[in-house]
Every structure is written in structure tokens, then in C-alpha cells.
Length: 244
Ligand code: ADP
Ligand code: C5P
Figure: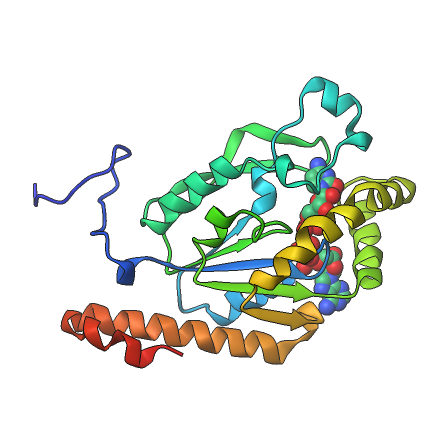
């Protein structure tokens, strides 16, 4: 043995140093604002780095049989709909360079696939995306950069109707009903108030190429600084010189 610490799951533990931890980005915004689109654009531009995307949706609690029978009355836009403890555990593991199994959520049946998981490996950049990723302070504290995708509500509703109808097997009437009863009120009560935590607000979502370019440049600067410190460990003290 070379004396390296080993985790219970067999992975070698990386020494705990802030410089070796991945760069964590939070991406929030209302439903169908373009969060996933913006994340995909960032990931595409960072093709030369190891980047993983974690969706808050993966941590929806599975519905009980009774809740499932009345799914139209369930509030999927309230913070309590998510298993935030599990999300924190998962992000904590990734932040320490350990691989994790992320649950797979089925929007059609409002259930987790019990047998299947998505295996996610340690990375240089972790992007956490979801409507309420800025709601819980403990989740916010994991983030090195917070982005809010700001898209007009009418455009979001139009996209939501199209998406839920085609991809999530919902009728137009049910989407409109859910939007008025739960999605819009929860956006106003929980999502919009969390916008104040954002470092960067992107108007027009994925249409805003300038904003995405600026964000990618910033991430590259941070990762470059990180690499420099790995090559020259004694440069630690100079770190603040590189801060934006
Ligand atoms: P979110 O992750 O915030 O729910 P998505 O990026 O998944 O949003 O986008 C929601 C829907 O809107 C998707 O069907 C997507 O194809 C569509 N969409 C996203 N951005 C645009 C855009 N700039 N122009 C047209 N359609 C878009
Ligand atoms: O991708 P997006 O950010 O739109 O995903 C969040 C939305 O998914 C929430 O507004 C919630 O109403 C919806 N949702 C749903 N059915 C589920 C789980 C989430 O309609 N079973």
C-alpha cells in the first residue's frame, strides 16, 4: 500500500484541499426558462474539461400510492417535493472527488426507477441545475458560482405546454391547470425570491450567447488558476492575485 486513504467504496481519497475540489456552478430559473439549454451550451464549450450535470429533478421524492392516485393535486413546485438531504449527500461526495449513483426520475409516473441509477464520476466542474437549487442555504453554500436564467413567463408557459404535452405525456388542460394552481404561485413564493442569490442573471436563456461566452471564460480562468496551483503548489499564497 502507498498509504493513501481509501473510502469504503474503494475509491482513493484525494487530500482535502480547496484547490483540488471541483468548481461547482448552480443554475436556477423558472420552469422551461432554458436552464438545461444553458447548461448544455456551457458543457459544449468546456469540452476539454471533465464536466458533469446534476439535475435537481433527479431528487424528487417518489409519490406514495395515495399521492399518485391524486397526482393532479400534488405540488411539485414546493421545496418539500425534493429530497434535499439526498441531494446534499450526493453533492458532498462529488465535491470530495468520489463517484456517486444519481437516481433516475420518471416524470410520466412521478416515480423513481428503483433499480436504475446514473453513475456520475468525479469531475473538474459540477453543474447543479433546477428550479429551487438556490432555496436551501446548505445547497447554495456548495456553489462557487450562481447563475439565474431569466426568461419571460409567457414564453416559459408556452414552452412548458409544448414540452409536457410531447415529452411528459400530459394533456394541455392538465398543464394549464397545474401551472395556475402550483407552478406560478410557487415561482412567485420560492423561485423569484431566490434570484437575489445569483451572481449572474442571464436574460433570454439559451439565446444569449454573449452571456454564455462570458461565463465560460470565467470558469476557464478559475480552472486555469487551479491547474497552476497543482503544478506549483507553493503558489497557493498568490491565489488572490488571480481572483476576479
Ligand atoms: P429548463 O431546463 O429551464 O426547464 P429547457 O432548456 O429544458 O428549460 O427548455 C425548455 C423547453 O424549451 C425545451 O423543450 C427546449 O427545447 C425549449 N427551449 C429552450 N430554450 C429555447 C430557445 N432559446 N428557443 C426555443 N426553444 C427553447
Ligand atoms: O425542467 P423544469 O425546471 O421545468 O422541471 C421542474 C418542473 O417539473 C416543475 O415546475 C414541476 O411542476 C414539474 N414536475 C411535474 N411532474 C413531476 C415532477 C415535476 O410536472 N412528477
